[in-house]
Image (cartoon, rainbow, N blue to C red; front, side):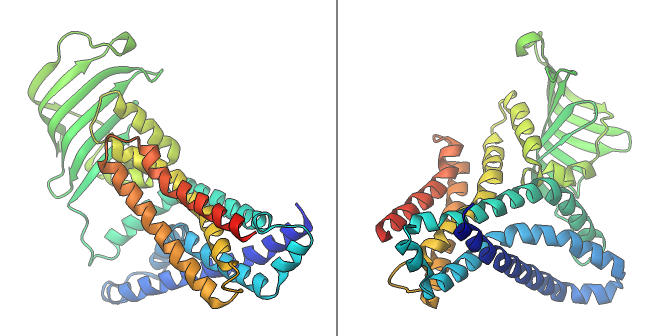
Length: 360
């Protein structure tokens, strides 16, 4: 890495850490004010409050990291432009496109950190956070219905339900996939409803498919009206973060999609969108870096605060396009998920590189 590159990275990373700290601190402060009445009313112990916010911090840090990197890149790039340092780099043969490389490198480091935190820390932290939110802060009622839940038990059975009704302790449109030790399917079970009882799950109006070698069905499906089976999962098992695509680890979600595709479940597209988002969301940190750099170094802004405001505006537009892309990917079934989800990010990179080349 060149001296100029190291200089830019040393300028950027401390500012990003400071911006991230400010956003996390403000988020915790706002959340504390919102829960202050419940804390005083229910006499929540200090240790519980500390544990709650220790697990709350990773969730906030991951979500606010792109905004923090946008502010830090726009601030540092504007300061370098105001002091004519980019002009000096250009005089020494370094183009504006080349000057963006250390900023992109810093963005890549941040993206890698966000991906690892989101994949390794957030699922466990989200589970503890939600449990404390429901148990300690009793003013909040748990959700009565949760869409698209899935659990894998110790016997290599995969349970997927379209909806979990916590109040009635029942599942709707339950699919159970059983596999052998080589992960080959052996039996598929579908039930219209599954009700939790003291003796196990009462399955209603379903069918059992037995699978042989090569995934071919063995014999005719076995229909049933009701059947009581003691599976090693409870309704609470489906409320854990590992049961929700948004908080699953990347490898676990990809495994879930593979298993669901074997049965042709219709709503697997939502899981595919979530899987793609687990890659695109961390990558947004690097693309946001590029957006902040481009609009803070444009000649018409000359490193003033207007460049920071314009960078923020384009960054928010990029956020909106990402949300629109993920929304369309769930409903537009004729187009591949990857194409719809990745299009806003590819367009953002193309537009920024085009602007940098025009400014060079």
